[in-house]
Amino acid sequence: MNKKFLISGGVIILGGAAGLAAAPVLAATAGSLGLLGAAGTGTAISSLSGAALTSASLAAIGTGTVASGKAVIAYNSAKYACKIYRSFSQE
Image 1 (tube, helix red, strand yellow):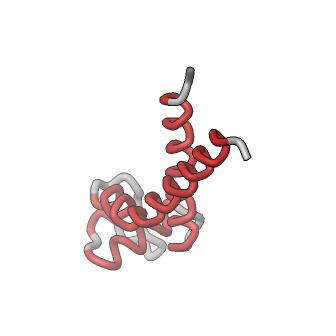
Image 2 (image 1 turned 135 degrees about the vertical axis):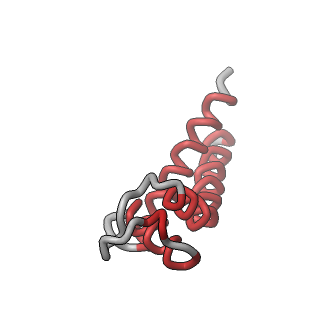
Image 3 (image 1 turned 90 degrees about the vertical axis):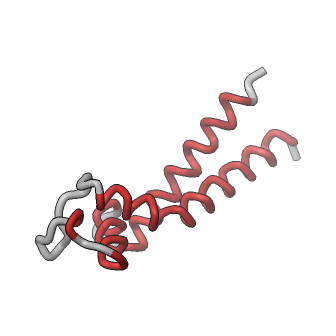
């Protein structure tokens, strides 16, 4: 296998894993800053705290579920990790 192919694959996997691990913190931060609007109950996400803030924020980022919110963040983290790797590996 091509060495570059293996390295870029590793970058994508690590970027996605990092995004998945950081998803709750990233989502809760966006929610507490008022960037995500209201929860499904109509309550402003920025007025929530703790687990309710995290869950509502992840659901708002995804298509209504916590799991989809985590997937969106993990996917975008992997995508941008790959772009950053490509920009540094240009010869």
